[in-house]
Image 1: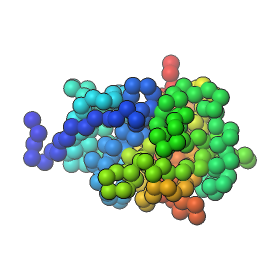
Image 2 (image 1 turned 90 degrees about the vertical axis):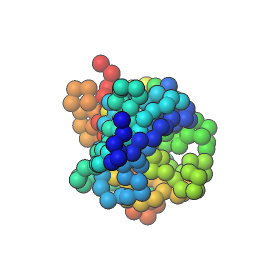
Image 3 (image 1 turned 135 degrees about the horizontal axis):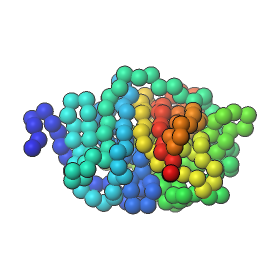
Length: 241
């Protein structure tokens, strides 16, 4: 039963927005749930926990109650988002030309566990985001030059927040991964400060911040070409046992 203070909608994840085969890209689904919580407001960070993989092309219940939004399938909690009062650190700015050059060292070019990923997979131009972060010489950073496809806009011609969250996602994993290695996103905390525009060019930057057992930690950011911060995030990944 839905209370008067609770908003509920039915959503389905198009196959285009997959990460691992058969499931949603973690950053994209985190951003989608965040949009239900935040709307267009960018006044605080949101912490999104991925409790279980989100299936594709399946009716899911998206609920917003107070400062929490959840995505469920039947009785299974898939995703939970809450607003948090937290200042997120951003890895240092890498100019677009250097970020684009770093793509040549992208470990996924040699071995990619999820080559169909919407964000970092080998998808056709305009279909996926094609963000291929590679190491930046002389730093502890990985970076990619992001050329935003014209095909990721909503019905109003704007780039949804879910696309920005997606861009913040995979780079934190590739800050750790060697060719063929992988982990699954467990939590992404992000704040979007500015809009992203279709056809625009941006730097996507990430760095590894630690490891505890199977947990991998990282930070990421999206920057405009002049170094203005667009969005920042921190992530927790879970490596396979």
